[in-house]
Image 1 (cartoon, one colour):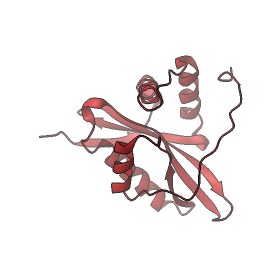
Image 2 (spheres, rainbow, N blue to C red; image 1 turned 90 degrees about the horizontal axis):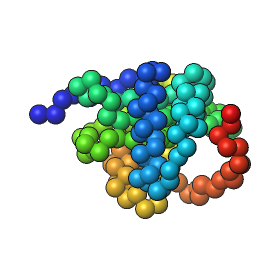
Image 3 (cartoon, helix red, strand yellow; image 1 turned 180 degrees about the vertical axis):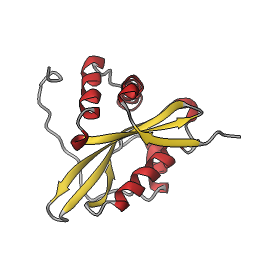
Image 4 (cartoon, one colour; image 1 turned 135 degrees about the horizontal axis):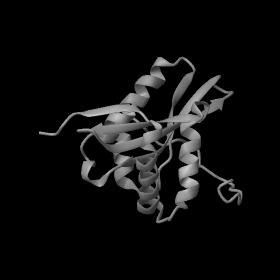
Length: 158
């Protein structure tokens, strides 16, 4: 029998787990080795500035098994915030065990309770068909938009 999951807000003591999760996710999905020092500073910066967003951590039997970052983007067209699910990670041994479903459910519950939130969005690698199927099962579908970016060489800022 699988032990129950609990979902909670991340704490500063979750920093190492979240850094490890993000580093592993980048390798698995994009074959990218992240600068762990920059990553740790980035996670710490968010944990210390709730206006930027929040992390949720999934635990099973007292051990962290997954996490998600939620940031927000103002929509003038809708006069409200989109919540973006980012940095989604579930440890390999816990996959296919309802961890992301529970994380997504908690994000959706909070979003629906907040009158400022107009919806949820996330991006996924084009080749990550397993994740895409999971997201589709939860009601997330493709948009008519193509995501473009222009990055700046800041070296992780200080």
